[in-house]
Image 1 (tube, helix red, strand yellow):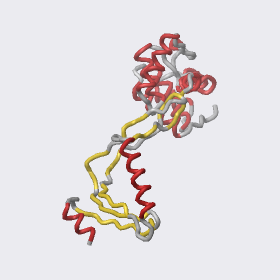
Image 2: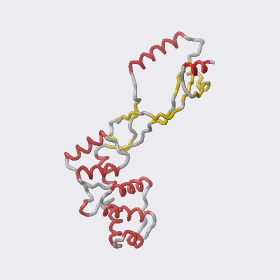
Image 3: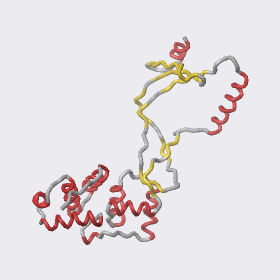
Image 4: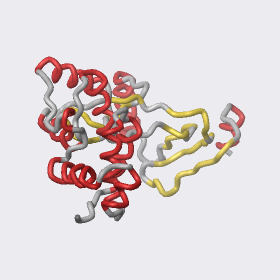
Length: 233
């Protein structure tokens, strides 16, 4: 029997599915596939799992030929009714999952239908879901104030010719929220508020848009009227 070649992502998904699965038969099948991918022989796997060698061969063949991890009575071709499909789609529109196994467990707990990883991925693509980044949006945003600023800045540039225009502000870099990929319906830009932690630096800086290389930045313990005056000097 040939060694199974798994990608890093496939191994991660299988190991995660093994951790959350409550069905010992499913866990045995996952262990057989993972051990075979690591070069274990059929007799070695059978001894480790305390199963017959023919069972190990069948488990591995089921995965290679059908991407099947559920036992026979679990079904290799899971089917959701129209109502169940609509419910799962509505749920995925509200909640984003990073890993396929998390959706598999949700469907199992909700509808008692067990998908394989490849089967679920096929189902997701059939229902117009893709693995992509959500759209990050500022936590606080005022379109009217932004438009007003642009208008005033345009007027100022028209009035000032020989003097540079400096943009100065206090900045507080933090360990900010980072977005990651998840299963999101195609054509739907899922937004996530991008907030950060309290761990931060306190910086005061000024730039000239015509000479960004000459930006001036100073770090302070805190930002107040005194530090702003110090920065001007």
